[in-house]
Image 1: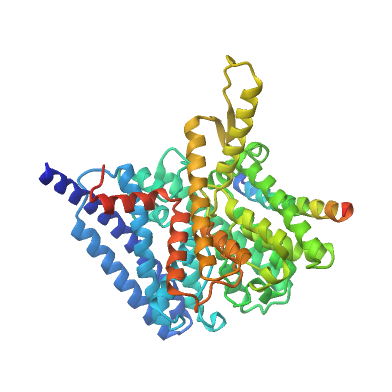
Image 2: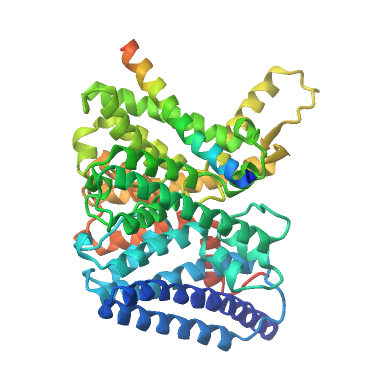
Length: 503
Length: 33
């Protein structure tokens, strides 16, 4: 009995090791893109950094896969969960090598924090002197956030893995909707949408930068970087002043538009791209998102007007609405300095932002938070329960909702949505409580906790290189569990504690 | 015109709708204040 259990456990972990190794190889190969940028600009120091980091990462990934051996059976659901959580940690650990070697981080922990922040499309950063870093390093920062947004498992399924049981891997990364019947086609559809938007979105940002008088020689890089940041709802910027650096309202509007598009469900994109226009007026998730944005905006707008934070409708829209959308789409770009939130915005606007950050964007998108579909399902369930109370006891109520296709509102769906929302709230409350324990003010603690849990990246000023290392680790864990939507990480922790994989 | 391009334009149209709704919300808020 025990021998059989041990053998089974070994096979399961080898399967996890094999696929995680493949994903690490894929992540390592990505480091060659900034290496090419460095070669193009004769930046030999950066080139060496990236070639060394890529070599170590690819070699380690291959070593993992080879030592694990070709799997004897297809991956099961449980393996998919474990592979996603293990691969994200490994990608963070290896991805931090070039950051650490660059000298722009005070420690390896800070470097790893930034990779986790990038991969989870959070956007909080501990980098020192971001205005001075090389183009190659900036390219790497934005590639990390873009690939994290689309999904590193999705990337592997698109380019490197062609195996049976692929859907089980895909689900582990919290992208649980099949856009096409075949999961590999789904992964490719996600990449096709992402890459087409990369071309169109970067061109749009380039034009708006040039119109605003930005130096034409620097505009292409800034356009591509800010596209990668906005579409992946990441929030990094190549300058320490973030969007404020550009002083360009048209560019800000374009960035916000791309952030909204990036926060939409890939299945929703695909439906529109197939000519199913009516989805824009029928899809429960999109309608919930639209409604939620406007309700939260009402609170933020009233809050800003009440404290007189900004004068005139144009300034309220340009600053207030940009930051609200940045929060709700979980992007994290901003056109004000972080300390201005607690000092200038007032409690009501701050709480509106906290709610927006927690609700977040759409499922199967690059965004974080509860996700619109879960909020929509829960609201629909509450409405149905009230309706049921008003009907005769014997009446049979079957509720439906429309999300890309017509579906029945089953108890299992409601339970699934409620559990994930509860877990987000529990993580948010825990992080906020610990921040308060460290002496940070309540509103700032709530704001930062929502930003970390919902993978947003806006800061009230708490996230700094000088913060306690234990808080950096706490934030990394919160970003990780929030992005993978808990279940993958719980599966990993349960397997490690119980010492076996129930596959 | 390719359907995907129309889809993309629809999505940019949606973002404009977001801004128009935001303008309406803040406009009404200022009016009833």
